[in-house]
Amino acid sequence: MTKFLIIRFSSIGDVAQCMTAIDDILHRFPDAEIHWITRKDMAPLLHADRRVRVVWEFDRESGARGLLRVARQLGAEHFDYLYDAHCNIRSRILKAALLSPLKVLSGRAPRRVTRHKERWKRLLLFRLGINLFDKPFKGADSYRKPLREWGVTRFDGPPAPWHFPPDFAARLDGHVRETTITLVPSANWELKRWPVARWRELVLLLPGYRFLLLAGPGDAFCEEIRAVAPERVTNLAGRTSLLESCYLVKASRLVIGADTGLLHVADLFRVPCLALMGPTAFGFPAGPRAGIIEMDLPCRPCTKDGRGRCKRPRSCMEEITAGVVAARAVALFPDTTA
Image (cartoon, rainbow, N blue to C red; front, top):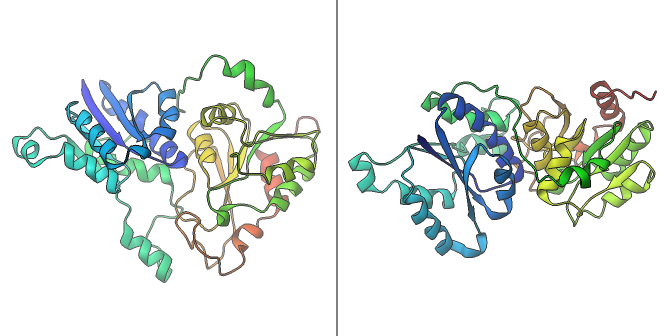
């Protein structure tokens, strides 16, 4: 048995993109026992994937003391391979515990790779507009690339085989009907969001479809989208857990959203999806059933995650028209009632 530890604490989209590497590791190492340490609120995603043998949960409220406690527990596992897919202060603390000089000198330390964030390239891109990254920057590919050092080279595995609680089907399947398109209109940062008016227009342009809205409890604007056609739009914003939202995404026929977590979950499941890409550089989906809609503007990309100020009143998102999105949606998911 070969023991692996993957370190990725957050967020939803990054965890989902990193999970694409699991099947690739198992293809190269069929006897692999995969452990993963993640933030406590992300843990349901990993528990749903039974290819991950052990999920280590880190509670942010426990602070440095809690992290050191988990590090001691991980040190007792004697991992053969360690993949730092986060590359932040917390992951460095864990690596310091697992890669002590004594273990390294004695040959008992795990082999390790790190997904580096290439900050100098980011500096050139966002400060000087010089792009040395592959374009488009596909997050899933960036998580797989470091594993080549271990001979992991097959990057075309099947959709993630998650297992959901048995009661999900009875409670949730009614929300996803034959003509339902799932919309994910929110994002952590305002610059990444497609305007509410565009979402409303999209609903009106597709009268033969029903729509399902998935978002967080603070996304009150979703009710504005529902109000444009309440008989065809179901608003579940704030009414589903993270795992329930993932189940609904997996059951969907088409998912439309910006660079946000549930869009990358759809990509992980190989569900057809449309990514409305605006200011960010690194959130492009990588799966074979993902489509990308973006505007060719000289100011793009201007941010790594949607934070900061916009110099052109959000043109990159404002100029994506509902008509273009509607046409691409129908091409991916024809209206059989027409």
